[in-house]
Length: 306
Image (tube, rainbow, N blue to C red; front, side, top):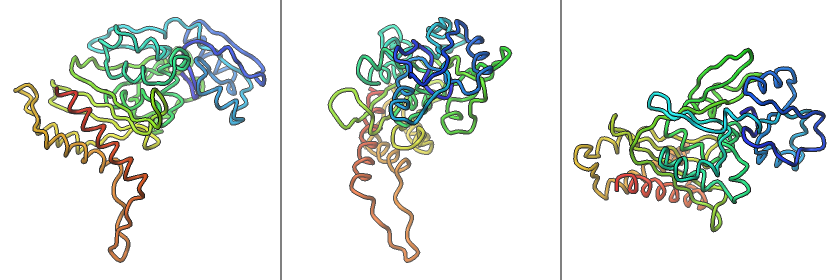
């Protein structure tokens, strides 16, 4: 996956402004095409690309379609991890067999939008476009997933997904996201989101939470409220220390409520005091968002522990 949408089926509505369309059949062929045409844009589902084209934000000179690259449309097991092709669609990840593998990612895929979006949009496109409301992003952050980047000359390099989302490491010229390596924890994991309307839609806030019994840890990521998923690390460590990992992972109800408040305050903190010591209260809309994050975090942990 490159800087825009991409790694499943080529959109059937290619913009008329494109000068050329290349349809490689392997990942390395796609990299070579992008290297030869630095202004080309990779495209797969096209859910983000077409929105940018239709709004006039993007006028690609050339397209590299990724829909014929079969090697990135499935997954395989690899040393306690799942190696996911960047071309997996949301619809495919939402199926029961995938849900048994990575439940939180399957839940995020099912919540990604209406059927035509789930059928077209891809895992790699969700990552590469890095939209704050991308449903897969907080899940991948909480799972501490790793990206395998394909580069010119058959080169491969690995980076944490959180680094790309934070802009620490950007894709270089000719590079594509080929695969996503996800640890298989064999433990409860939950994805929840709040939307502004009934049914699947754009998230106002989302929470992904996974338990890691082997390390006696809790990992939580909050999406949609910032340009990238937020990890409330202190809240994770605090609540992990309260869980009775040897006795059915028990936790008192008061700790669940406190965890939600801790997560929300970490992600949406109070304003800093003014020079005179006064504190400006948060606007009502921001307070509502903070309460929403607290509720999602509390419910996610409660479901994971139940």
